[in-house]
Length: 224
Ligand code: DC
Image (cartoon, rainbow, N blue to C red; front, side):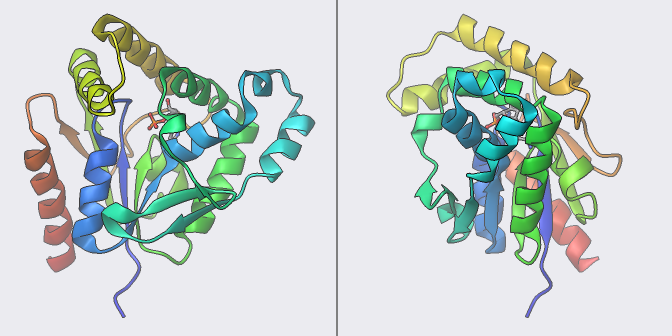
């Protein structure tokens, strides 16, 4: 049997990580781990009130959440307490709440343990903010995607439209900038590339080009 492999894909909001993670996972025949989905499901479960809880209360609430993965490739499903994490967590309100909760060390520690447990004996394409720096620092293939905020807001707009949801470009740009600010500047596990990450600026590239660059790099490494 082939050795388990971990590929990390980090980057800011709206850069296209999820689409790429799914495709890369499909190509490699492994599961993909949407850690943003884990933070979002946590924010959705706790709600705004979660921000007022003491560390002890928060720990009690976090204890009730169990994450698991089903299937592999593009069909991988993230489950929270045995229920698929769905579009209910894909709103701007949940995005911002997830980003705020993600600044809390106790939430990060909980996520770290849950994410590392999922990757302990399973090959994964893991996407998020700190996959290459904190969660899977030993991963042999690390990528950091970036793009201008205006470009990322455009991409988000198209995603919402595809889901049949209304969105405003100016508001999306502002929300992406606010999350960038919070995600890059938090004290614990801020968004930044690992020293050994392959950095790809996707502003001028389409998804196919980014996918080819990632797969080429992985296969080059694997075969070389
Ligand atoms: O990738 P996303 O937009 O679904 O993530 C939602 C928020 O969750 C993001 O703004 C910050 C937080 N997050 C994080 O802090 N670390 C991760 N590995 C993934 C997400």
